[in-house]
Length: 308
Image (cartoon, rainbow, N blue to C red; front, side, top):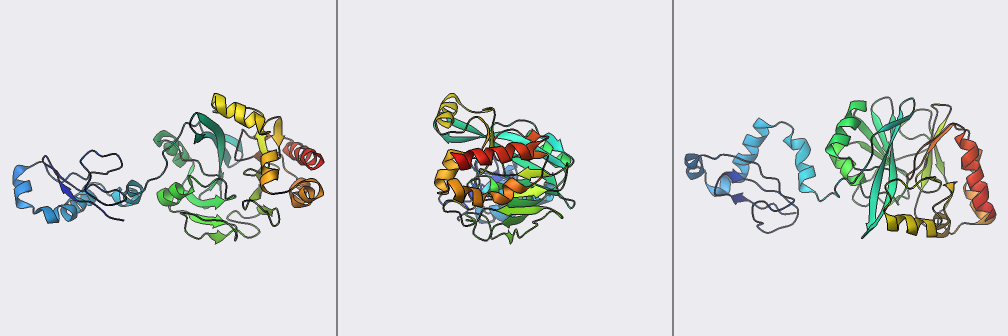
């Protein structure tokens, strides 16, 4: 990574971005740290020292810059449209966001946030707007980031950089731009919780997470989804997802089964632990939460998929 340095005509600044070269002032992605508007200061400060002086003064004036500097230097995907953070049960919240799969193709996705005792635990990360982050931070400090699936990874590096949490992942997970995480093990970051695996999956690695709160709360990513509505879907996104079987309430989607090369008895064996769990509440990586009687609904979805 190369940092470009520039003494601008009106003030000395240090623009920082990924890549190399000498971009013009105002280029998108640059972070300019103003040093001085004074002509005397400009004459007395050699251009070669401008980056050091600018950073020193910026740090003095804004102590939060070190925490934000790495974010400014990285090309993280921007926050997309999302709703408010809503409660599911004691200490468990979710927020419904969106994801652009391609031109004019937008689908919904959902992040779950749990009070883990020592701070917040984030599942199925979705980057929030500045207002959304302020709302999130009212709940507490993000201390843990759980990677349930290789399929929901686009915003995990942003959370890892923004909040510096402990990252938890399956041993077989593809970490991408994340540092190697703590093995999630049987319990993960929340005492009394359970990690549910699905055996040797042929597609992407994935697991689910059961919490001992609210009569039991299940968090999944893609294996079981709530397709009751299509909030934040584009018109083409709705058509595409209907054609691919993402419809009809809570389902184990045909696409997931196809990617994982599971059907019939093999699918039943893979999801047997999930089907036997007791829980009142359920939230996945897509769709809204199910509050009350969720285990019977999920068990029915699995049975329907096995019989298909």
